[in-house]
Amino acid sequence: MSSTGAPDRRGRIGLVPARFGEGMVGGAEIVLAEMGRRLRDRGWDVEVLTTCALDHFGWENVLPAGESVEQGLAVRRFPAVFDDDAERGWLNHAVATGQPLGLVEQQRWMNANMRSPEMYHHLLDHGDEYRALVFAPYMFWPAYAGSQLLPDKSVLLACLHDEPAAYLDLFAPVLSGIAGLLFMTEPEHELAHRVSPKLAPHSVVGCGVEIPESYDAAGFKERYGLPDRFVLYAGRREGAKGWEDMLAAFGRAVEGGLPLSLVTFGSGEVHPPASLEGKVFDLGFLPDAERDNAFAAAEVYIQSSRYEAFSRTVMEAWLAGTPVIANGGSDVVRWHCERSGAGLVYDDEAEFVECLRLVAEAPELARRLAKGGRDYVLEHYTWEQMLDGVEKGLVEWTTAP
Image 1 (tube, rainbow, N blue to C red):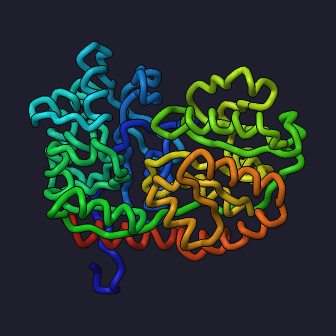
Image 2 (image 1 turned 45 degrees about the horizontal axis):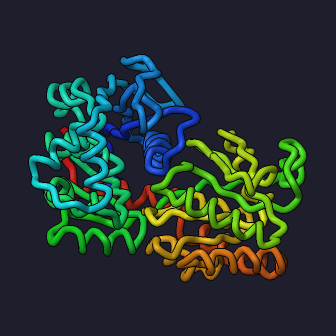
């Protein structure tokens, strides 16, 4: 700390997401980018170290390597190396299903997925130039390899989920032996203690959420030719987010007569069943303003994922005055819903259908339910609160070069 009590901001901070860029879908990466811009505005010297890839499935190098300025931040990109072979597929399946793997097999799994040797060598050669390196999320190769190379400078925005990968021996030194850990919610913090008997210095800092100045729900429906009543799903359309199960359950609810359509935007394939023909509207990628309008226009937002460390989309729905239907398998989202009183939680398909029925048949009740959500977000999840916590950790856990 300086003599005035303000944080000492000497030195550079490297933010190290596996992906970074406009139009990218991914909560951890978006949070790190927003954090970087705001830390820069608070006086930190911020640089983003990332790969040339945007897609987290194929890891194709679609952007040029080297230095640039993007979204107002200095960016240094390195090629991603990705070999889509049979061993990778088998190891991914083994990890996802919790099969026992030795440490060598775990290391083969990590290196069978995306890696970036040139990023590693940059950190090896220039790591001493940074006060801190902030990685996110825990599971990707940059966070694993980079934090082990420079543990005294490494801070991890963990984005920890209750999934088999989190319990791998591979991640024990990441959680216990680096400079510090940042958690966004208490359930994530509690999970970390269950996963690792000894944690590095850590803090629950929350997360910042953008607050739109206004919404245009009616105009949004008109611009995209949407029906008057629809439910919304945003983000990655993939199995890990519960997309397929939710889509199938929604189809059965509609077959039962519920007068609702489904609007979705984000990444991944949609593939609605034939029974939902004309009932599913895929908007692809939306700019930020239209994303906000989508939340305001929806009857309800569906969060079907069990694997959430925070869930920005739930907060965006509540800011827009829209209720949430959430998968109760996520301790984090259940915790948000119970604390705010602004969401409905389901544990099986029958409960999911009943939640949809309440929204369809009692829309005013559903909207009243959501009113507490906006106050909850504004009270707990401002950028100022998060940045204060992040800065405190950076100053306490790292030393300026």
